[in-house]
Image (cartoon, rainbow, N blue to C red; front, side, top):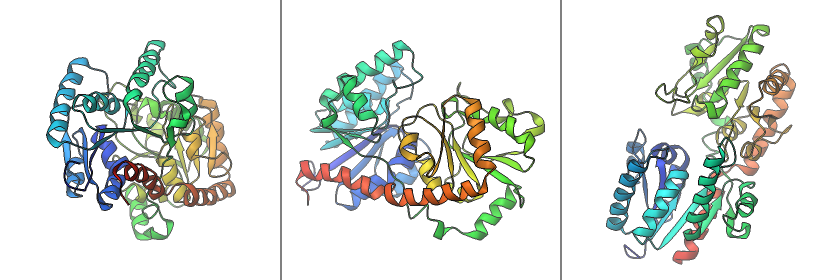
Length: 387
């Protein structure tokens, strides 16, 4: 091994937001178990947070889009880092991180290459040419992955059907959250009252909430249209948005372009928030009308805090939301179906309470992230001979 008895590993994703939000706790878990754990991605707002947590960060200029010239630069820099650091293992996440990380790992002769499937890009919303590219990419890179995890149960038979990898050779991982962070017993009523006052939420208001990027893929166009249909009949209804609008991105969906002026003052734009757990208690219901998900975290967070969920009936969302237990599933890209689901949950307080209770039960039983970390650690322990 590279440094005495301690394995030295690096988690690689396309951008640092994945490291900061999705993988930080996992990497800290491995670090606490004696594994020297590094991170590699395109740098952004989370680099400082990761480094302050004791996770060395290696910047590589990866982009989410396919750009051969930029991808070659990123690959070259990645190979230099991998050769210099001499990692025992790289663990790959997100499509570009998987593609470039696989090539980099092979070129730099990293002994072990692991990968977590967070959802296949070819499943939905892809042209035939794009589907062909991503399927063939998956077939090629999976030949050199020593261990593959899948967050989503449905992606495992898909991988076999598409001749990517045998189902028996994929470890089901699932997904989880920090249940101590999203714990109703730890809510601060004063903090909640202060946020309600700050954002103009009055007694008697009914708050429909969304957490995430305001982009087409998250179903924001359908959400705004559904809100515009149901809000006029419900004068106390407000829409709370916790997330960024990146106006430079072609898929950005800013509220002021989709919600008329007479309803816009009932759209609360909280922007990006590091402490999203403070905002769920403001909500009466949570909505995620996505087109594509691997295994989304936000419905898990809402459920853990007892907030009922309306989500689209797609792979990923079906892992986090059990229809009639902790939320309602509605058709994807179907405004009429979304309206029906929202009306049903918003107009029935008893249903909201029942689904909220179901959410807390489901979170306690299925969404403990430490169990997922242990599944990965067992594979590390197996190959490195750890206790």
